[in-house]
Amino acid sequence: ELKVEQNPLFLSMQEGKNYTIYCNYSTTSDRLYWYRQDPGKSLESLFVLLSNGAVKQEGRLMASLDTKARLSTLHITAAVHDLSATYFCAVNNDMRFGAGTRLTVKP
Amino acid sequence: KAGVTQTPRYLIKTRGQQVTLSCSPISGHRSVSWYQQTPGQGLQFLFEYFSETQRNKGNFPGRFSGRQFSNSRSEMNVSTLELGDSALYLCASSWGQGKADTQYFGPGTRLTVL
Image 1: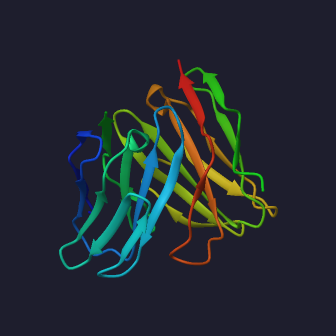
Image 2: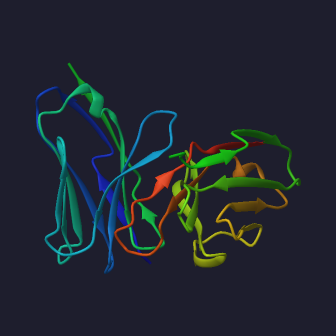
């Protein structure tokens, strides 16, 4: 059975710092998604990664995929308060979600 | 362009009742997916519909069902409600014709089962 693990589950960062969220999955996957959820809100799609070595960037967020290691990373560069949210990864077309990483960016 | 709409936004039901939730996708989108979010189980995929056919299904009991109409609007139904069905139900729409499709989520329906 496909398992998806995210870490850390909680992340408190200072503004201006860099950090990485990790998403490990247990079986072969043909796609990986990253989503953002603000408190009390719905989900927002961030990235879809399809192939080994895929890298996508949007603003201060960059996602990458290593299918051989079954690992995706979401890298945050020079964090700002507006990035505070919960970030989820999800794998495959039946969308197995990780537990989410609650990110808090402090001034 | 109007976003994904879900109705109702909030719903309170009692155990044993049934409920129907509605999702109107972005115009032109043919795929609608449904998700359940609870504090205990997190986000879970329910099912996906594309052109009125269920294309994918998560691991939920048969009490959870859905359908999609010819205009791509979708409904999901939960029969014989249980307390554990209390959740935020999200729907998302996309073009549905490629792996790289971006999903656009509605605001969700918050269901409380008493």
